[in-house]
Image (cartoon, rainbow, N blue to C red; front, side, top):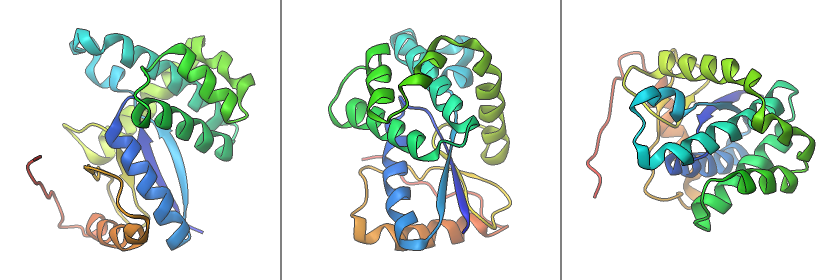
Length: 193
């Protein structure tokens, strides 16, 4: 079974929408999804918009918990953790907070990994993964980043206005993964309405 890797930041609704589509496509096309951290806090560094600072700090701390799960191959719990965060933050409009992250860990059956929220030892792994994703799909990119089997480089996106209908997930996957694998492909852009 092949693996598609998605780098995400929990605060990014583009990551949320792409991840929901990718999970639907995985069920239709028979691949697994590997979740990796991409910290917007690391990406922006000292240039973080002050209005986003608390949100991105809590999101980065949530990536510590995700990293702890990834490093022990707790894929099911990591999927559940990300699903609980995204549902609360992006579907229900809850602010990205310590309480949201803790509740998501409990919901995913990963409460013991919540201690990573305050554990800075995961920051180097998060930084390495963020830099790897930028190197794969960048420069000048954000989240999500996806690497498809057979593609020499990753891509940023897809940036989806909404999660596609489940019955279209596999066909969209076929189109995007084929495009990503083409060595001559560079970019497709459409203005946001």
